[in-house]
Amino acid sequence: PHLQRASCLALKYSLVVVMNMLDIKACSSASDPLCPPDGRYQFNTEVAFDETGGLLAVYHKTHLAFERPELDSPATPEVVFFDTSFGVRFGLVVCFDLEFSHPFRDLYAMGVRDFPFSSWWVNGPPMHNAVMVQQAKSRLWNITVLAANVGEPYSSGGGIYMSGEVLASLYDPSQRVTAALVANVTQDQAPAASAAARDLKADAASGTDSSFFGKPYECAMPFANGTCVAVAAAPGAVLTVHVEDRGVDCYLQAVVAAAAAAAPV
Image 1: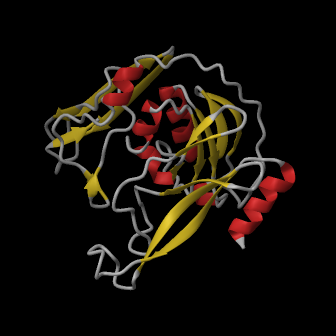
Image 2 (image 1 turned 180 degrees about the vertical axis):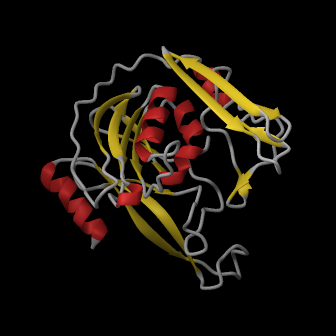
C-alpha cells in the first residue's frame, strides 16, 4: 500500500517522490551463509519514483545505528543514484549514513551534488543536533541536502540546505511537529574548495582503532587538509582545535579522559 500510494502521488502531482520504508527479501542459508535464521533480510530502504509513478531507484541503508538486530545491512554496500527529467542527479543516503564517508564519497565522485535524506535522528545537544549536522555536511562538501526527519521531540530537525545556506528548516524539540518545507534550489553551486582532498582522503584517519556499533568509524568530516587527526595526550590535557573554512571559524576544546590514551579530534 505504501509503495502504491507513493507511486500514485508522484503520478497525480507530476513529482519526483523519495520515501523511506522497510524492504523484506527472502533468503536461504543453503545458498547464502549470511542469511538470518528466520530466512529473510530486513532493510532500512529508500525508494524514489519519477513523475510518471515509475520506480527510479532503491537503496538499502549501509550503516545501521539502533536498528540492529531487527534490521540488516546489505552484504555489499550499495551506491545508488538516479537522474531526473529536470537534469539533476540525486544520491541516496539514509540517516546514520551521513556520518560516514561511504557511500557518500562514492556518490560525490560520480558527480552527485544533491542528496534527499530521510532520518530518524537522535539529537545530542549541543554538538550533534540534526539541523547542525545537515547544514555542516552541506557546507563542507558544497552540496544540497534535502533532509526530512520524523518530527519527534528528541529527533526534531529537518531542512533544505544549499552549500551551507539554510533555505528552509524546522526544529522544535518541545513537541511532536511535522511540516512541508519548500524552497527554490538552483544548480549553480561553485566547485567545492579542496574537493579532491575532501573526497578521496575523507576516511584517512591516522592510525586510530575506533569503532561504532562494532564497525570501523570513518571520518566523514575532515579538516582543511582532508584528514582526521589523532592526537596523543596525557589524561587531563586540554586539546584545542581551530578550523577555518570559507570564512567560518570553528573552535573546539576537549579534556582527555583518564582512561583514554589517544583522542580522535
